[in-house]
Image (cartoon, rainbow, N blue to C red; front, side, top):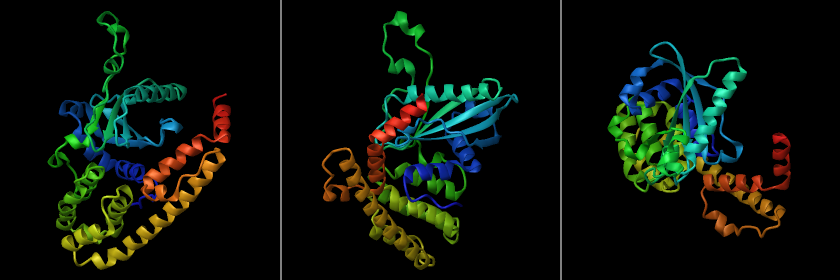
Length: 315
């Protein structure tokens, strides 16, 4: 099990988890409508290295592209888009349509036939998805004009609307997807006991790399799970391996604090380069690591040098 990148934790966890074929297959089998699953031969599922998310949207989206065969032997693409913002974006359906066009444009350049692309938006915001799921919901027109709106809709995987019991797969996958589901919500702390119990029953505490992937995400992905709370829940769930896990966790917390300090310094410098008053350090201290990363990236995008280079690439 690879280690989770310490920065941009939601993005890293999404790509680490769903980038593995067996876990992507478990997720799709668990959550897609059964009639759609019957149309797919998910035993042929394999990842593609291509990414189609626009650079300026990478703070909000991550994407994974898979190829698979249909039950009749023809080819299809499954496009997983991860919406990692706390609020659903109303333009997501339009953005995904653009990505689908890019996927098939790339296929044409590679002298391949156009293929069906199944777009799936994985969302784990604190509130249920309330943005448009189709272009016809997004673009409001009188009834006579509706035929001119493309009939395109998304498959939204709103994890808050999926029961924990519906997730299929091994204990590590189920524990991972439950952490992913609850990490943006206020009840994440209440769920840790049940999640850790799954790992204990499966005997997974011995798999240090796998466990550290989850604990690292809990440390970096939310500010609701303090070191004290995590230590308490670990003590309840596992006594044998707690001593070996806690020093590694302590290193993670020190590293996270070091990274946050470095980011805060860079953010203040970027404000000065933009001719703005630097953000008060007290204000920056109230932001968690993912928020600091997003703020730094948004400031970098406003630098004249970055905008000039982006314009040059478009030309």
